[in-house]
Length: 322
Image 1 (cartoon, rainbow, N blue to C red):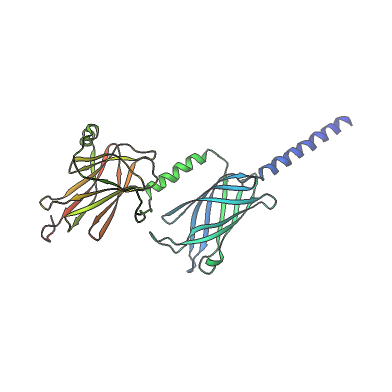
Image 2: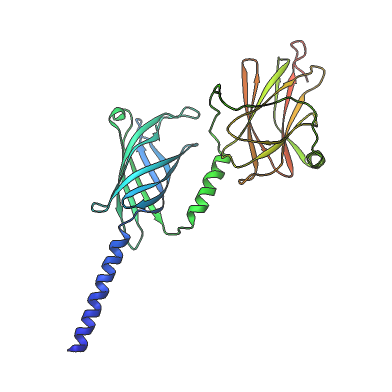
């Protein structure tokens, strides 16, 4: 009898340990969650959002980052929520979600509250529930159904951050805000400068013409920004093969220069030479060309083997240059 009692005691203790182990797992929603959300549009069409949720959980206070993609629009939002261990419910308040009817460069926000329920199982853990529109938006923004799965590979956090940055480099939808009076704008005067390394390497790199344009102005204003995640991209600028700026770091603040146009030349060529690739290759920039009341936005990509350029033609007496 003593033997069987001992076995029963061991089994009972094992069951208790397993119970607390399972309960312990349900006490946190920390980790990397991924999945999709869906919404029915006014015409009965289903619209999908791809969602990534990275969470830390400290005594029920959940913090992290919500990343989501809709069409070719992207958002990355810091979030703070509450996780109720007794009900296993995760609540988020006042999160901007892109309205399903939004179009490129005209994304409209619906502010939503999330109520998601945690379910943990051997087959996998899920967060599922609804994003509900706030009172102000209840007649225009439908409820969004969401289901997320937990990825058990915690190392994915590092790869996710890199993936998000790469996405922003390749599919940038950010446009510069109007400049403020106190913005530190770097203005460059186009004049010959010396950088023997850049000048020597430029001759060995191929040139890819990203854009050709024709304007009826004596000069154009050029603004250069980092295209996407600010990751330490540094450039030199060549004008008609001559170096005019070097060691310029791209950021969300513009590097500006005014380029005179000569009607006797077929075109003026401005080239972006990558001094490095930043932390996210390749070296990318947004160039804005202002010619009078017209504005052109051009995405430039340079590598250590190729420089990107823009060619600008000046009209001659109202006649186009061939």
